[in-house]
Length: 305
Image (cartoon, rainbow, N blue to C red):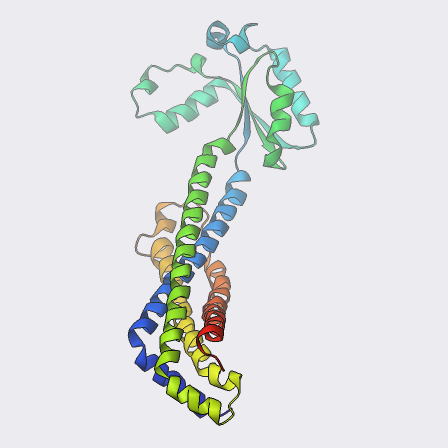
């Protein structure tokens, strides 16, 4: 096959269907940008979970005098020194426990003032109203229920809380956004495929005389179809390249500069450039192969050879 002929036919096809080709490029770019963004968001959620779940603790709150009067779980009174020693000893015996820290009422009050000292309610809270607690760090945060089952309902224990629940709403929101992005991506992908099929159909119809002559002189089906497939692949490749640029620019402005989330949210461990660069070959490959396959299928219907 002469490469010059194929390239000239690709140029002719792109010029004849310039508007539809541009629409294909934009549709492919948007769908693949959403696809890449969804992959990166999924990786971001995973990175944040690994980062935060490694830092959160299970908190065992102990009964104080106020709880004894108001909470049914503390009906037997405030926690005693012997109960505290027993709870701490039992925690240290558990294989899943990595570290145990005891927080006194004074320490809890100090931390509360640091976080909520500017609020009105902070002025009426006293140290004796705060709860003592054990801050338990687990080797595997997913095994929170083992600790909850062992200590919830025990004398002197008011509640057992998993701090992961504080972050779960954030992760659920990000997962929901990820699903929404995938839904929009699927819609854009369908639109892009329809445009590719229509573009190939129009291109085949506009060159029906040339293909008829090639058929009469004995050209193979592959030889006749190749320019159409290459046109679609080239448009998809441009769309994939645009999608890659959008992902790179998005990472640059959202995290490093512009909005600069890395500076405004320093407690969040954002994905790095390596994660973005690792997704680009996949985006390019899909952008190249998807239109080519769609064109090949369309040609079997609209270009009988």
